Amino acid sequence: MTKRLKVFLPKWTRWIVLAVLVPIWGLLLYSTFSSSDHPARTAPLEFMFATLVLAAVAAVIWLSASGRLPTHVVEIEEDDDRPHGGSGRGDGRG
Image 1 (cartoon, rainbow, N blue to C red):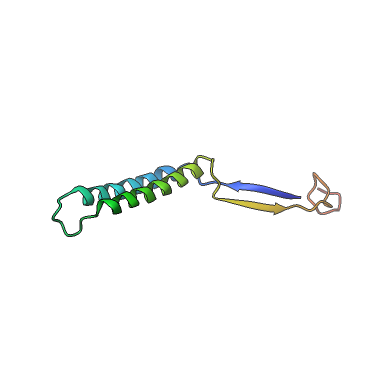
Image 2 (tube, rainbow, N blue to C red):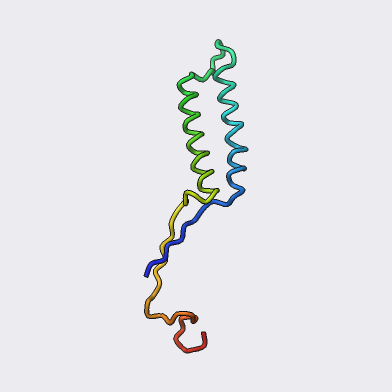
């Protein structure tokens, strides 16, 4: 018999990731809409793409940390011939 365990991110992860992603997005916003003659200006299309990527990353991490989207699934195979409720040693001590 196979037992499935869903693994999620810790609850505090969503706040840490948002604290990191929001300043990155703010820097992109500033570099896009600051002065138009700046040589390192981000194009609006690049800004939209980066916003979509950051929003997708934030959404996946938020859903995983809130317990809705598992990061991975662990399958554990259990022996059917092992006595239930014991230690599995078979000597009656468990």
